[in-house]
Image (cartoon, rainbow, N blue to C red; front, side, top):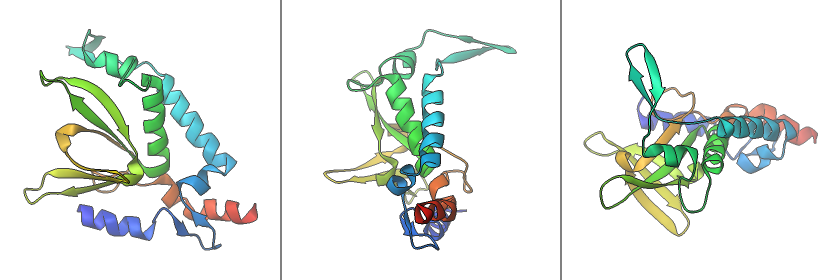
Length: 182
């Protein structure tokens, strides 16, 4: 499927649309449902608490190595967050939107100097004329376009190899029923 096909699929399961009950289902309304909140919280906190290091293959085995990315993955990705907070945010985005994005900021030597989270709700992924992925970020007061080398992207289960499907959109009817019953 092309990204345009994914967009039409997303439209059919659009986050923020009404369910059959008439209840509007989006990230915020879904998170107010205790089951959704508990699932997203448990997944986000569990994954965030796991150790994350860079490994190197050594034949059939692997070994943790001293690598500059270990600081970003395991301690401080940027000046405002701990690695736990960044990964918790990324997992929350995956659990709600099916995709997580972070901006890689490079230092003068061309090495990653920081990793800053981007809200998946404001990201649109497309292809340029050459077929390369481009990331169009449209947060109010912070519109930017990124190339693939500038983004750390994690996609959940998807149907086109590029974008993950939104669990909230896919479960819209069940969540809408829960909202309506409440």
